[in-house]
Length: 256
Image 1 (cartoon, rainbow, N blue to C red):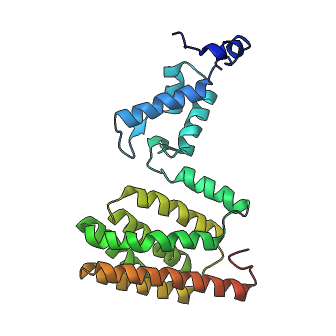
Image 2 (spheres, rainbow, N blue to C red):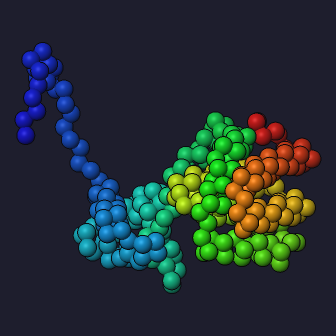
Image 3 (cartoon, rainbow, N blue to C red):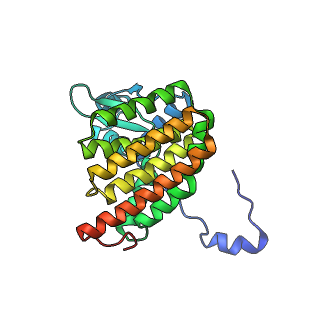
């Protein structure tokens, strides 16, 4: 195909305006083919894909090339590679992974602080919770009920309580009916976990789960506005308690 060139641009074209096309790596091409297959065929999460060896044979390349292609797809959140006897290559829906990696880099460069992450939560989570209260399904409700029961049975385990308290908010995002909320919130939460791993306080976590019980009760009673307000209070409470905890332990402020 001939690309039309304006008269006054012909001299520049003759001098080499366009660079020759580069040959793409096999791993990039293979990643694109697998991605197209997943998207066009709408393969469900958990669907088993051919093994590394099978892919190498099918594409007539080395397993090293296939391994690099799968790594590209893992970074994008489209596949999950599991090791071991029950391992393999599976379709994934970890779409938050690229966002989380970017946030992690920004935290490492001190461009993003914990306060910034809480500001994001305050802007979107109350609205997410309100939408969840309006659109929640029986399946979503059952998942939230099960999570609260698990908290009741494990009140002396700060690690599990913290995990459940964070998952409560993720379940609300999924119950909202908007998949984008889940992707954004999951990336923010995983970054928060990485930056506050030392924050394990049983009294605090018990208090948070009690607040979540109240939120769930309001959802069951059809009180979306009250749910929105209480989630905002919950986030502010967590933020303040984290600051107090860091002061007691001698950690720098959330803005540092």
